[in-house]
Image (tube, rainbow, N blue to C red):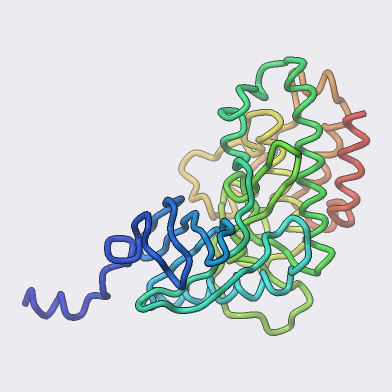
Amino acid sequence: MNDTIRAASPPPGHVSGAGSQAGDSVGGHRIVNAVRLRGCAAIYRATAPDGSPVALKTQCVAAPKRLRLRMDNEIAAHRRLAGIAPVATLVDTGTDGDQRFVAAEWRPGVPLRRMAEHTGISPRVESAEAAALLPVLAVAVSEAVARLHTADVAHGDLSRFNVLAAVDDRVSLIDLESALVVSDPDPLPVRRKVTWSYAPPEFADRVRPSKAADQYSLAAVLFRQLTGRRHRIPVPGAAPDSAQALGARVRVVAGWHARRWPGLLRVFARALATDPSERYGDVAEFTEALRHAFV
């Protein structure tokens, strides 16, 4: 019985076997350190054969189909977005033994969720440092998403985990597994990953990503980054992907942020509208409204 179970189980993920330790090589890319390990998928900082630093994403070849499709989708998105500044340049893809891999240019920066820890500046506390940093950061992130949209691509899963900010205000958008070419009538049948804390209300109906949906998620991310609070009031007992949770009442900008930048109330109220048609026409328009509110 036990032998039957073992034979029917998928092979162990590579993160617990060869090709997962510092110094190991995958497709000629030498691992420096692990960034994230999850099941049979992993992300490493690595060194390419030419010595340049890369972000190396690996996946065991026996991964579930939904994960393999996400990697296919991410590769396609990188190719579509070649030359778009906020997206890392694709360096290499392939298979090495029992692992598939994607190598992309390593982008310096800190995820937005770790920004307060990294800078020592809390958005909840009024200070000259916060008043100087937050507007620059918010506009830079919004500009990055607007640039993505110029290539007719929606990110599909914007969150504070996958937006990196560097010391020179350079913003990078990573983790493109859920990206979608908006005008593509026949996209890959990907079961997209969604960070429900920032997802728009229409995702309760499992609609495909859109630029309007990205705008909502962007506004939700920036609301949290600027105020230190989630944009929606939690509904006790509601599943995070339910219409009840995603359609919950949206908070208004309050406290010192509202006193210093009163225009933010109107900007976020519009970008976080439940009805996509009531949001800004595009993220470029939202960016301009945001920039004006900070003046």
